[in-house]
Image (cartoon, rainbow, N blue to C red; front, side, top):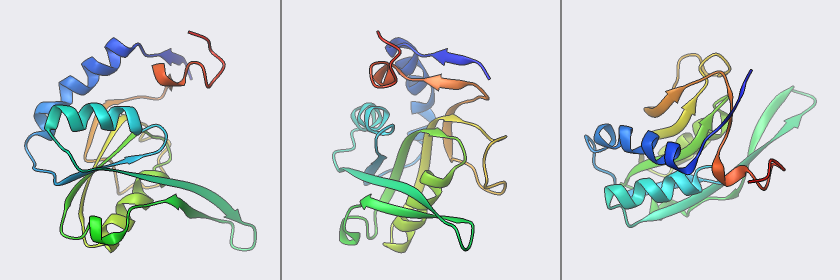
Length: 157
């Protein structure tokens, strides 16, 4: 696996390339998954004119007895904000697919219609062989380091 450092310019080019596809549908709201989906979500919301921007935060904890990872939502919009909405869910990466899939299920439980977008999709690592993001900018096997992660990951600028 190779480390790929993306520039801000590369991120903008990737998003701009998929905007025409995203415009084929209408969205009432955008739901960014923290932390990776915040920046691409903001860029997409601006380009598509989506003014209702929400945030979800989910993590996974293992249950040793059942050997299952269960989602724990630290933050999620109240269901009334999603009910009847066409919601664009945005994250930076679909690695195993757990975060995006869990958020999508919860949006649908709230009565929303979910569409998913990720910057990078790793189908070979996904634990959901029959599911995939609706939209993505690229398929990769690489370790993607986004420009907003450089300081946090200790890579420097």
